[in-house]
Image (cartoon, rainbow, N blue to C red; front, side):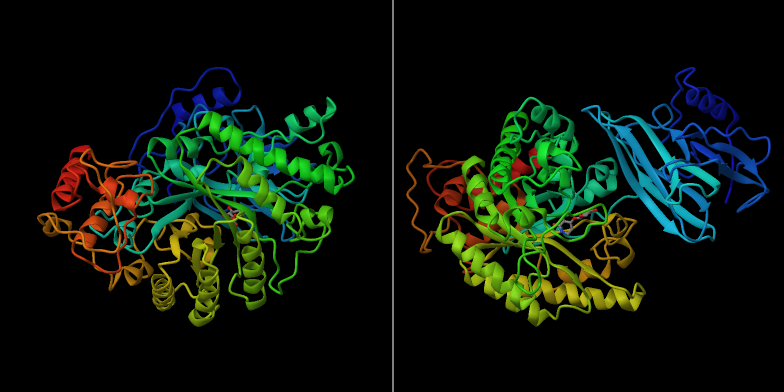
Length: 626
Ligand code: XIL
């Protein structure tokens, strides 16, 4: 590895680290040569890392070395969070993606982590782990991506070790802007291709926003539906300090919320007119234990069922109120009201705290005694969600037969009470399990409830990451998509849990359709193969076609009851998929149905008849907008 150290930069970094002067930004767009800070911690080189605990001894040492003649040695630690930190505010820019590489070494029993910390818009200090490893060999942090947004301040990169006192060694540190790799523009858009069947979406995290290539893939392939990977979960939305302050004033049942973690994603979806799946309101995981405790104290007793019902109602009410107040134009068309309440054997989760290691126990069950918290959650969601919001129950391993049955029974009961609109099948799959036929049985059972079905978190892991393994994965993906197309009358959206493998929550097993370089994998090719890209240039020349379908539409000469001209599939947006849908309909494709409102929206020229002229006019309009 080439190790360089820009002297002028180092001097400025030193000054910035000491808080003396503000550092001139040194950033350029080409990553390869544009290293911001690179050092091998050789003798005589100034080390600009500072100790997080203020007690660490940080020095160049020959005790343990990866490259060159020395490494950074950090000793004198007393807490696991003690370690070296690098202030980024003055050397990196918000909204830009960077990569950091380094080698680290400690003891075999200690987990060595690279993380980021910052102060968020609410003044709360936040910590986010970027990568960890265990073992006493030298391990590489290779091109680990990170970014931060404009409302995050006092941003540091830091290293820490789970063992409180062991020495840490770090070598060959390089910080640079992430290279911008173009996406493949000439391949078909998944959302266009699948538009006759269902919407296509994905999950994204706030950190993805700073990668132009990542977001280009989102906009090209997954623009029908966006889920926030974490940022609308109770862990991120509950404001502990404000909750405790309110409790101190005597109100222990009105949980306070903040959208600060979700803000950059909400802004993005608002500005790009992207429909959002809200994820999630009531969940045992990623929900702090203190939410269930008296006075919201970590060590408090669990509150009563009555208190928790009030907290649940007010939490749900406050989330919807905050979204309405701050983001009235973001189309959050669906919410996962309750997530993962059933075990594989069809029973409720075990009662208990979630704990820092994620026990799988449910504090909801602890307080309620059973799953009787589910119905009130849907009741409150129905009461406070904007009219028309689709309410979903969402779960994983949904294909385990007893769990499938528990979900069907619960959903049928809620549906009879008018409280639920859909079932979300997470679909975190592996090439070896479940079989396509087992998966199909579950989809068939959910479809038979008459509720809307969405695939909400699709990914497919493979332990074999060789070319052969990726081919097997491609076949599995293709078989699953065949099942979903077969049930497309019941399925309204297929949402992937991420875009590129490296950014996935299961990154090591390469579960997604695009690789870390933003290129389509065999899995992408497999789910595109056999699906024809509708040819919009030939079909738009169609002239007036008599509408002879069973759909009755009453259009007045002034155009009738349209909601958004061009929005043929009534998803709140006007896109090329609407033109494709209209053309297929006009070509009397029997698999296509368009609602009355959709047909009213299709009458783009408002002459009373949706026809080929409208399709042509819509195409011209979109071309002009581009
Ligand atoms: C995952 C996120 O992707 C991770 O970043 C996070 O660390 C853990 O949660 N089921 C769900 C999702 O409903 O919210 C989970 O998301 C994956 C499993």
